[in-house]
Image (cartoon, rainbow, N blue to C red; front, side, top):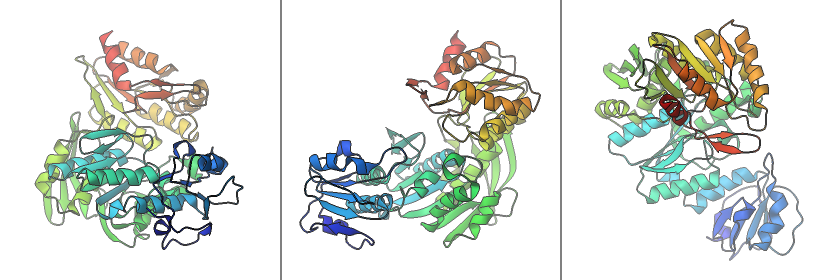
Length: 480
């Protein structure tokens, strides 16, 4: 693609050198991936600044370089200066791959919790109605049945646009994706053409990045200036605030407030949740294989989104009944007189929700094993400790992904919260040992909840990353 065509109509850039006849064969922001004919975009990251690798990129044959500040270069190359290279990367990536989201149905789901489950619900419903669906999210990326490992909730704009293009080439007609607050603030989804935006809720998370709730909410709200229709949970106070910020068609969901899509007669059992969904003057019975009131909100969001595409109630019901979400309220088969469940809950609200859901049908103790991730919001640690103390009959505080922090230091901060409740707990910092101890000492009718990592198959330490899957470890402990 010619550079002058790639930049046509873009504002705020300055150039050094002639754009005419400069052929761009690929775009990169990682200098290690640069090859001849490449457009190298310098991103000023939180740890690494791409501007420091310009000369390396030029030496590898970069045809042009995009910068946001004055630089000194070796050799001759077309230099493009723009005040926001993240934003420009998104726009250039979309153009380079032919703006694929303009040819796809695109649904974006944002919120603190419920994003993953809601996207899987939407995927299941749409596939049940005959669509070929792509999914981009925390667990993995899917092109139909093909699974592509995910490094982050929302990929960088370059990889994202390439993925959309690949999905289009493989016959995908609809893509549902988790849209993180980071991706909105960092322009990863800037060039995406969303049909539907979904807001699930907002609660404490990622304040290490956003610093306060106002910034966090403002980041989430950006999605709703990019879509044609919004599905908003109005039982959430931030959902109510969002109503006034949308300039698009709005569909509301709720249980406690009068909404376009509402749920009544909710019944929660160990095998899942059922409710009557009301839309207009019609009611129909819906069942989902995930226990908990929170899963009703996710289902309402999925129903609202799919209804925008004219999906029938029969396909909605069938899609939700066949739902499978790895690491979300996922049961580990025990063949014992107690139960084991693995869930991704890693924020105060998500831990509270899953514990409350389990307590509804627990006949014995609710036992929870959890820790908190290192290099993340420290303020939530004692809060989660207090939640576990109030809602679980017994708690084992352990390690999650400590990253660069010492596991014992993280555990001490969690312990501050649980101490306030007077609840029974112990500390076993090694996660494998904690799971093994819990299963070895389980009592009849116990429900053991292993929380925090869910679908993850690794554990991140200061100096290494190891394979670790809560489900596998639990199964191994059950065989001992």
